[in-house]
Length: 108
Image (cartoon, rainbow, N blue to C red):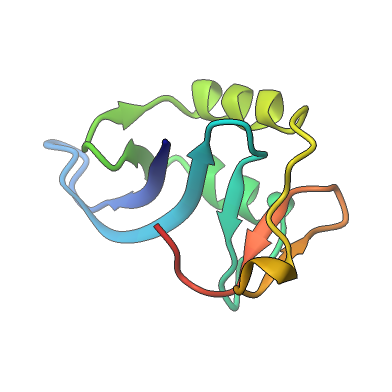
């Protein structure tokens, strides 16, 4: 079982209406967190900069808001898992320089 996470941009400061969703990645039981790779986001540090932008909010696939602190704690705890997706899984997976799992193709 897994849960997908998305980054949204706040469009209205008064009502916190959001748009411009990007799939951050997925947390699956027994696996390290799997990040999505984009042209402008290809490492954990790139994602971290995007997520820490005050105009960005995190939601899970059930549309629940997720705190940035909780998200980073969850990702770091999952780094203890030794299971990473790899090229043998049939998708374009890689591990960045800090050891975080990434996919070049959309997954859910």
